[in-house]
Length: 84
Image 1 (cartoon, rainbow, N blue to C red):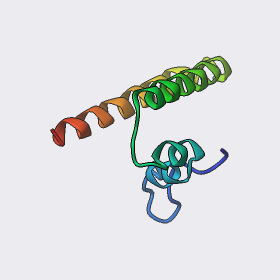
Image 2 (image 1 turned 60 degrees about the vertical axis):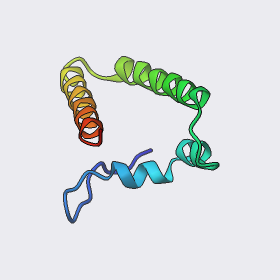
Image 3 (image 1 turned 90 degrees about the horizontal axis):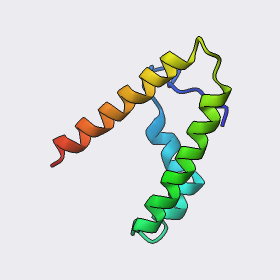
């Protein structure tokens, strides 16, 4: 997946657009039901990718990537809390 993270015209993060295109998302959402097994399986997939990314990151980039991932997780968490 060698795509830009941000829309070149608006500067907006394009994750929503990419999520909709992801085969994993399409497969999970095909029946409009998300099961515990699908969540666990996808969590394992994400964990595998994060392990690969951590091993591949240069030492000088890892702190920035870690902070960005953590702040993305904060954004996700506060968005979920807002909907509660």
